[in-house]
Image (cartoon, rainbow, N blue to C red; front, top):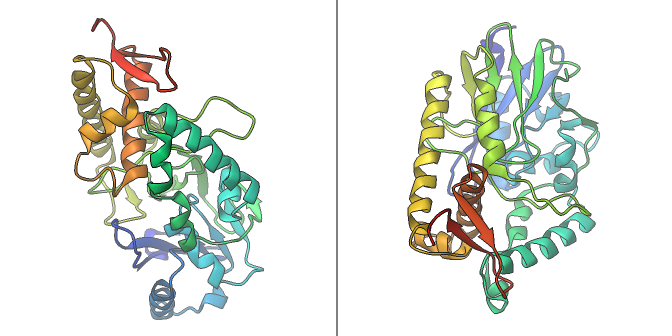
Length: 322
């Protein structure tokens, strides 16, 4: 099976990232990789492009999700309920809109944001993550897949776990010709945002998505990849060069944060407002995720420490700055 049998379908989204790419794979069965965003416009565009390829929605035999974000899963609600849905097990709680998980998510992040330096009185005015879930779906996984798994009907493709942008993120790799269906893991023109997610209920240590993302980027260097077809924008062909560029840019941002902290201790929210003075209110989750990621990175390499002193707020400071 050659690359010509993987077809891109791009549909519009209401998000700043713009169009999202879905992929139709004509293998042993007709597989849709990712499922767009839940809007009428996206559904009509999807059906039109599918028809141009000679298919109807009823012809699709299974859906594989690279991750759980709304712009990659929403059109599942327009597809038959009997359609098999395949993804990483951590996607289930999101795509099913599990009420216990969503309640836990809200409680965890309320405490976490206060620790980050946000006055509790301002929490109700902050953007609610649930707003974007209206573009998601309410479905359940049929099959959960993990590192190294093969998927029935997709001969020659292997599942690779690539957490960072999402805890549920996977990619599909075809060793024969080096083709990868990469979701949002490595995009051609913009850097993917490693987004904050809570720990599993009952656990205390949250995931550190930027550290995970860096590891997942380096993981790509272990494979002979000719092309990554991506979740947004153009294909990526010069994979090692782009990986090194992304890692270098991330270190540059971390160095910027370290310079701030050399002038004195700061909360996460202090750093966020300094890094993103014009957009942090509008893109709160993205900017806070980026800020926490840089602080996690600096703490991991021993450049900063964190402490609490008679306050619920957590302060970060550069090592040796006192």
